[in-house]
Length: 278
Image 1 (tube, rainbow, N blue to C red):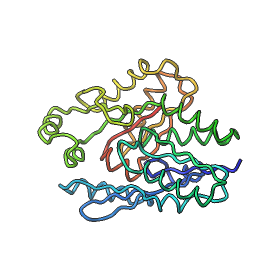
Image 2 (image 1 turned 90 degrees about the vertical axis):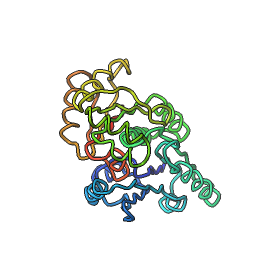
Image 3 (image 1 turned 45 degrees about the vertical axis):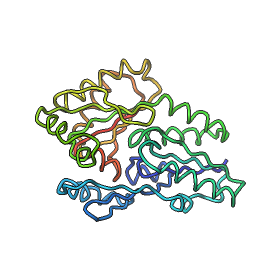
């Protein structure tokens, strides 16, 4: 079967990994102080971080339009699989769904399934590699859909932020609570639950949060064999490598893969944050 894999730019990859995965990414746009950063050119991410750090205003993000998705859909494909950020966090899933409906009216021979990842960042990367592996096995379209949706239900996503500045500026947490957290050096562990973000645990210090999260994985999942753990790091390579070593010491994951955050993930993970998925 001739399949195509598509994702929004919340799938965190390097240029090389994007090419090897053979995935078409559809870009978000991040606006900082009126300047637009289109999430295609990874070389601009550090400049975007610096602009965010210098700004006192909230960032704005725009999801891909239905037209953006239709532009990358391959008319020659027998089946197209699309991976989007959680529909609780963005309109990307709705855009992809509208695009698929219009595309299939003109191309009824091509089947399309939109995977609402119920996640973001490393979670989407995790899902993208899983769907790619199913495609490479030559499975039937419906079987890939079934196995992919099951994978989403069983997938776990967590993140730890170094800075709460963006959450404060965007009104996600009260400024007073953010100042208290900063004063006490509190680094919360957050968890994705049914596509939404919830507090998992509060700790003082980033390394303590990394240590607690590493140990918590053994309580969350019974068997790590056969799984890969993905770490997305936002200008936090040392933290990611520290966490990777802990995971390899404690568990028997098939692999631990570290990738840099893309533009959208960097905007919300902020400077120094990490996201993990397994």
